Length: 105
Image (cartoon, rainbow, N blue to C red):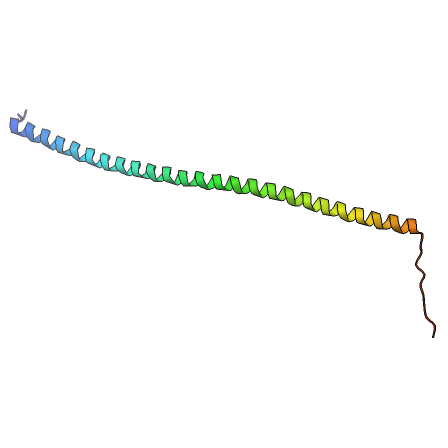
């Protein structure tokens, strides 16, 4: 068997420690990237929530305005129907039939 000297063991331990430190530094860098990405996603989520809140307000305002518009159209149609009915009633009560006049010359 080959005997390993104390210096070789120390060298292997130092090399192993250096490799561990390197891997730890790489993992730390990757973790920093993940945290930065998560913070960016959190900021985007906040912006999206603010946009959705504004959209809710817009939809609510549009719905209320549309309701008033439909109500106004219904009232206008009702007013036209009442006007036509009043004209028909007054024409019936007057019992006048327009006579077509022609002039013979």
